Length: 271
Image (tube, rainbow, N blue to C red):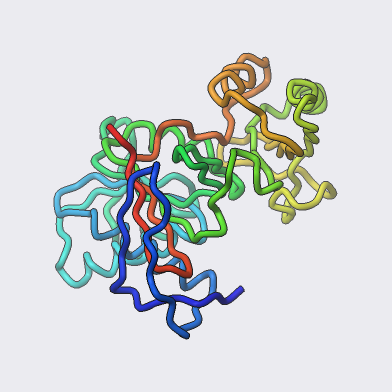
């Protein structure tokens, strides 16, 4: 949906505790995808020649990867090594001529840029509605700086607050058993657990199971209420046999760039 947007040159920077800086809106109308592109281009300003870069997955991260490829072609960036978080991003980066490697060769990454499905006031994230949460968490957990790019629709009061999916990657073996355990785990929050199917992206529960790049299934959890202590929830999920990883990225983002009707806002984690 198109929303009012001021000129891109207006950028507000803030800490996590403060509200958005007031900026005067203009009649310029941009689509959600254009907002994503603005946030992505701002994130790429953090990229310097010689860096090892984690390349995210999804519609927002795609713009950042495109931009990195463009700057390489122009000679404005040099000696970049990309570490892709999915097969799709791997193919995109190759098509753009971005040199690629992996965590085995580069266990410490200078910077990762990726989108998010939800961002709470403490910069905790939900990721994985695109299905790449395991590789994203491995790569973004190995970076010195993790820059997250979103439009303002992804900002929530609490994790799960959008009412949309919080993904959990599980092994296919007896998936119904694992899904039932996950739903029971968060019964207090009105949780519904649904197997993700091909083409549904977590929105429907019909057809063949969606299979991740790692050969696993995804169970999407939908919450009616706040699940409470996120670290306790994380630990409880990971203790369940059959669970590979979940889509809560806790205390990982160092910077979140938000494009919205008041311009671009940069939220920085206190170190």
